Length: 46
Image (cartoon, rainbow, N blue to C red):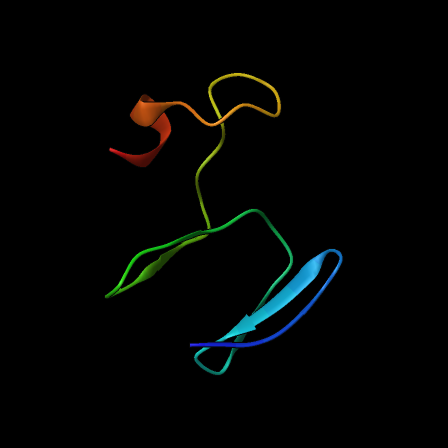
């Protein structure tokens, strides 16, 4: 569950993240990097 959000920081399930996230129903992926700039590609989330 997202507990709080401000620019550059998000608290999810008791953890604080300061990087880009992909939030899945069962986990959070904080170690991904977009393939192309500010665009999200299908390959980014597979």
